[in-house]
Length: 284
Image 1 (cartoon, helix red, strand yellow):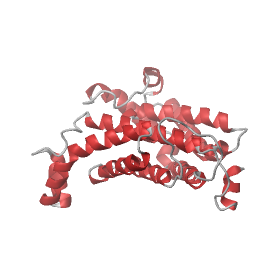
Image 2 (cartoon, one colour):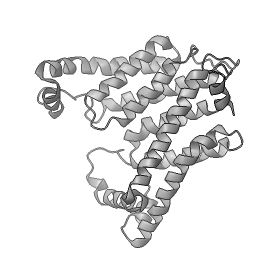
Image 3 (cartoon, helix red, strand yellow):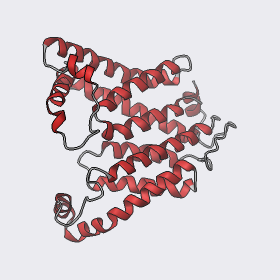
């Protein structure tokens, strides 16, 4: 298996540099979408005078630093979006990538649960370690060791994300029992018409009608879904590394992330998009 051969050789095992170059394109495209969406639903007006976000920033950082954050916030939104677009297009990737990561890190200053930000920074750091990011939209396929270390990093990062997620789910009695998912779908079915922004959730009507209550049958169904999700997260990384099982693992991963994204499309676009993009790194 190439991954273990690469480690044993001190990352001198030749791999296809085009895999990291394709990931760079997808990384930039996903973050361009994330940054563009972040401008909507009140994002552009974050830190305006009298806003709750500015008040919280003043409490956390002090008035002077909060005012500085408010001044640089909108220019940073524009800068990082343009940088992400340039990265996807392969325009000066060694310059645009650090600008993108700086724009992502900005969100650590105000997001309450920045898990997607940390994951983005980790995968972006793997790209920084790549020796050949390519130029433009051209993808090279001549084997080399330029991207072997970065490719192994992406495999390790994705494996850690999946296995850590599975571990957290296994530790949660409420999730394993199916009660968490049943309650989530039931609550969403009751309040979806009162949500302030469209596109926050995209649970299909068929699911709401036939599994949107808290009956014993519904909980049993969601218990099976929970067990399937845990099993998939454990099995996907090794299955992606094995050439014979990789196509089936990719199909299963796409289906799983599509289901995840239905729960919270806007919040999970980065996680699902980047995780699926890292599948490119699992083959040499």
